[in-house]
Length: 214
Image (cartoon, rainbow, N blue to C red; front, side):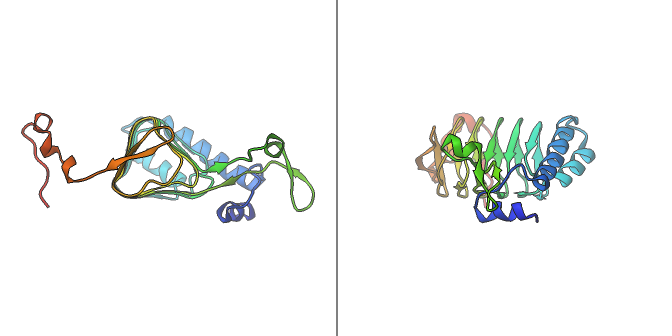
């Protein structure tokens, strides 16, 4: 782990232009482009490229592509997850995704945060008085069995609990408790998800299918 990575994970300002960080990002960007150029049935090649990009990628998970991972190795993805088209994970800080999650097209996670004041966004002084560009980052955690609609953005520092459904087009700026349907910009809690949401209550859609009895 580089000295600047340690700053990222401690939540303090870091220099994204640091040569060691730039090398990590360039590697991930190139590998992301390689994955995005593959065909969906290039299974072995795709699996190999993902193993080089992502810190952990659970068994049975699938990414449609194209993809963009910023660091890649700062991301951990659980088992049996599905990611539709145009996945972007800007994982300066850690990104952790639980098992059995589903993500619609154009899903984005961002972890970096920039100073609000324009002069501070441009430059600040490091401990040696040298002008540098700085930002900081906050980790994102997504629980298991979540479903995210199309065009959802999850912002820095957010935790989404287990079994949540996030409506299409939402911008998730704050934590979402478990077992919640939430939507909107900014994303807000709409209601609890309960047993009344079973497909058994929608026989016209269920047709001749049925839920699995546990």
